Image 1 (cartoon, rainbow, N blue to C red):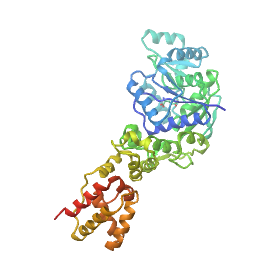
Image 2 (image 1 turned 90 degrees about the vertical axis):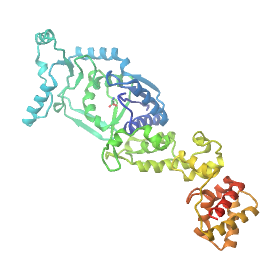
Image 3 (image 1 turned 60 degrees about the vertical axis):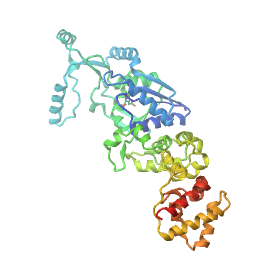
Image 4 (image 1 turned 90 degrees about the horizontal axis):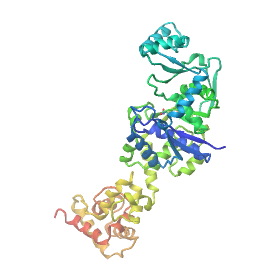
Amino acid sequence: MTATTRFAPSPTGRLHVGNLRTALHNWLLAKHHGGRFLLRIDDTDAERSREEFVDAIRHDLAWLGIVPDGEERQSARFDLYEREFARLAEQGRVYRCYETPQELELKRKVQLGRGLPPIYDRAALSLTEADHAAKAAAGDKPHWRFLLDRETPVEWVDGIRGPQHFDPAQMSDPVIRRADGSWLYMLPSVIDDIDMGITDVLRGEDHVSNTATQMQMFGALGSSPPRFAHEALLVGSEGKLSKRLGSLGIDTLREAGIEPHALVALLARLGTSDPVDASLDAGALAAGFDLSHFGRAPARFDEEELHRLNAAVVHAMSFSQAAACLPEGMDEAAWLAIRPNLAHVGEAADWWQVVTGPVDAPDFDDETRAFLAQAGEALASLAWSGEVWRDLVAVLKETSGRKGKDLFQPLRQALTGRDHGPEMAALLPLIGRDQALVRLESAVRAIQ
Ligand code: GLU
């Protein structure tokens, strides 16, 4: 089995984590089957579509490591839509309507008041050619609806939701084209899915009712529908669709120091029963991608989880992966020493400053200063090696009688100016003998 999937954003805004997840899942589904993943820019709405958003969509996908196998733009395909529309018109599957939004709203209210489903009453179907001519003469332009077949139930086995059943008698004939000739989303999407050989449509469950309508369009165009799967929507950790989540995009996450791989690892598995695992690369995520592991409950996007995952990704990052974001002069040994302390790579600069100095140690009491003086002497007489911290501690335990926090804390504070941080065993060799002695001396001198 092979697969061709697509991600079809409208370039009317930036992508948010919800769309990014859909894009990622479509990419993983295609890669799982060794297939193709297409980026389809749904820019039929010339007024709301912007080139800057098309670029942003490409950049955001690239940042995640998602490389489409092809890109298509609906605005370049109007001729095809026109031809397919003409075919539907020949079969009588599209028809002209003139109701204004206000008239439609009134009809809805009346239907609801009578306890009837608020679906379009097909009044326009009974207009004669003479009626249409009169409308045209009066300057009224029609919009177009697709004529559903109300006799044939709509059914499909959804890749996530299982068997689906819709009664078209309860559905409105959808408007597919506006009076100005512009296209609504429904029909071009189906025409493209057919023309591009899409085998699998994976999208949010907010599209389930669209799918029910589109199913009949595939049939009317002489094609069998692709496989459909609708994933549960993303909600915030508090279980709701928050405003923040609806606008949370790559820029904000990147500024917060989130690594693309951390986001990919989380989004890939969000909504599935598979554990989130930062150690899996895209290939492994694709290999394990399986629609049957998706659940129907809303998928919770927890930013704290993302930050934890990010730390795990940073802690496993090699020097060469991190190098471009590290401060000048910071070498591999320093990266390896500092890495376990980082929530994101940007914090490395802070710790590098601790290595290169200067540092601000607190004011110590007399007794501690005496101890630090001892430490300076001991350090000066020790052979300088990768084990120097261990050796220093061994000597000081003997000579000072201190242990535990009393021993370690003043040394850390004097040598780094901080109360916490990377292992001193790794930091001290990076700080170097001369700097370490200077720092101990100045801690002893501080308030004399
Ligand atoms: N442009 C549509 C949207 O963004 C595409 C939906 C689909 O995947 O078919 O909602």
